[in-house]
Image (spheres, rainbow, N blue to C red):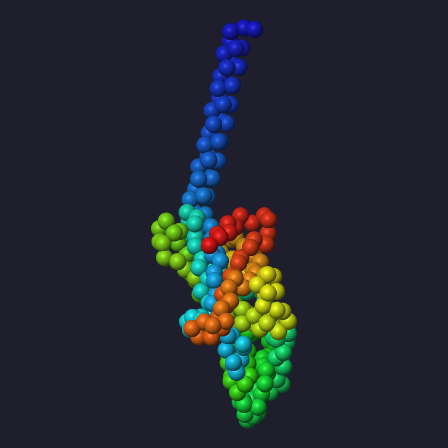
Length: 260
């Protein structure tokens, strides 16, 4: 083969290698930029301490008075980018579990019907309205009334920065009504041993957020709750501690689960 032909082939190969290297460099640069703006949220498992009480709406209440209506669930961003426009919702069949706990739906609210609250035992008033942005329940039992107003979709968190930039922990709000209903239901149908051995299915948690480029990510988690300790003679009477765990629902999700 003539020398000129070899030179031509060599030049072509060199040009091809340079082009491939350039394409690879561009792809690496794009990948690095993508990683540099990518947030990654993790949800921590928590322990919930409860106190057993008599003559109230439910047979127990949260030990922490600040968690009477909402329980803080820590969320960390272990990615490199800020998570924006965070929305989350608790997928839970409230009406089904309310009925399983023995609460009877009232057709009229006692306040409007001028009936005494003391007359009602395990009653609940709510309206099924898909257009309402909240689940609203008013419970009546043993002369007590307790209202709950739960957002169907939570939007109170605007952003979560990476923990490398801001170590402050942000929390999502778990409605305390969910564990109260599940504990009441389990207490009616299971022995203490069964409650400690068998995890209670908690429903699901769905989270949606974006990175700074506007790319959305959806996460769906299964939730379970298990009693891990019980003390019959606590400072405030019988006490128990439940562990609430979050598990990945989708294999394709890149969500990282943190075991606390």
